[in-house]
Image (cartoon, rainbow, N blue to C red; front, side):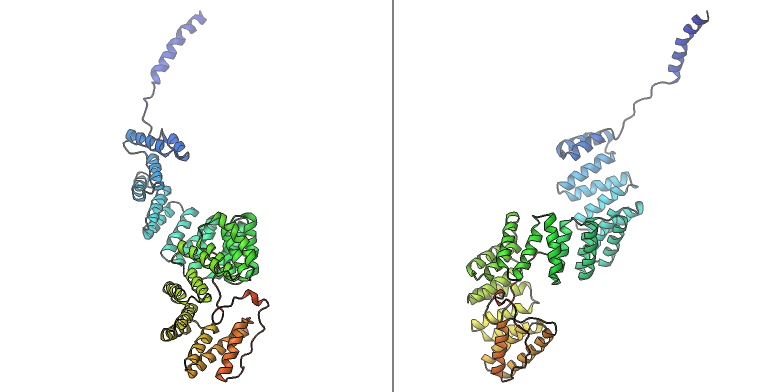
Length: 460
């Protein structure tokens, strides 16, 4: 009997439970397609992704934050920065406590060139997340664009304290270079190389800085390391080639440039350097051909124009030399050597008055190169102004004595012309010349005293 009672009461008890726990109604889920939107986005299937976003926003009446966020990302990838900014601002309104939304708003403002507005939004994002290295890094970048290098440095250092990152090191080094502090930039890049010793870009940049400072051993060491990790790094190849070219190893440099030409056949610095290698080998027509190609690829590069003027001077094509040198002076009006070469061209074109004005400008701009004063003295002497020639000769003596103190080696042609000028002016051989260069063949013979051709090792 007891068993029967139990079997009769069980169904009743289960029915009671069903009545007490009714099924919950299905509620609409705003984010139910988010996983699918994300899947299509990371697969770069943007058309399908946009279709899914459209359906999701229709269902949620435009209240799905993630769908709007991804749509804004896609618009920015398509180059529609202003519409993407508006959508990110909508995300920030829907979820004002999310630093990611504010970061994307700031990023769009930055891409629109509104750097000050981007800085304000990044600071707001920083209040929501104080330990985000990306915020500090981007603030540093924004400050560098408005030339506020002090705040830029502070933000980038703060980013490095939170997380060391190659990109932040690179940016901080560039900020120091923009501020004119090369030594600080070198220290930053040295720290970066210690942190990331196999980063070819960092090694190349550090090598280029050493090259600019004339520390060739250090430069060659870092550029060699860069090529060890990345044999196709054309910046390192170009820099190493320019070092060899400077020391007269034109054939070795050309072998380097052949490798670079396969990777960057349209590089203006590459064709400039190849042209000056031909110039060093006295193949002037080939040099002009390569320099003309560099000029075609980069018509506003004053170094290419300078070299074209130099080669045409060597070939005694003075009108062409004047054309290129005058264009170079318009682009680089603060370089005394350019005005000196321009004066040489004008002298050979028998325009003495303008040649004299050009020399005066060169003397005013260049405070260290004795070639400028020597050439000016020759012009003045040849046209009967012995007093002016003597004054320029004495100024050249002063510069030479300063260079003597730094153990500078002088070109034999410069020495020969100075001695002839001293005899003509009857001032005696008062200059104490250092010994000639060990390999005079590495120096090129040009009109008047020699002038250094400009190689382009690329910029850091």
